[in-house]
Length: 98
Image (tube, rainbow, N blue to C red; front, side, top):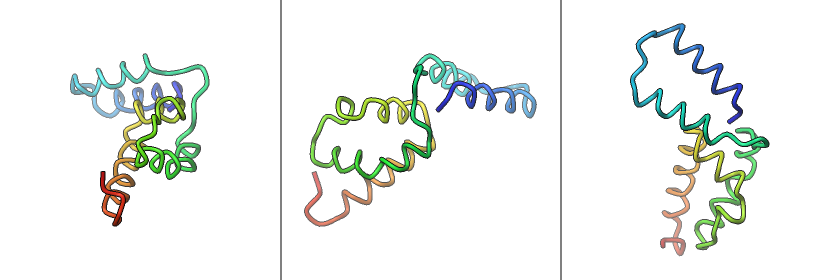
């Protein structure tokens, strides 16, 4: 998730609701702190998510093999939820349960 997108979301939230819950503010600040100079977009992540999940299912070190994707999942709730759902489906397949 790009810094500009996070800032835009923050501004939208402040316009809509001046009283933002503290956990949400803390999550946004943490996301900004974790922002890298070069990052993957959500579209980039969706294109690679199946490969990343397969690596995870094989017990590979996904953070080492795909660090930019891992970083994106750490800060993007939507992509992380998509990844979690994909892993859940893969774990249900016969022969892939860990």
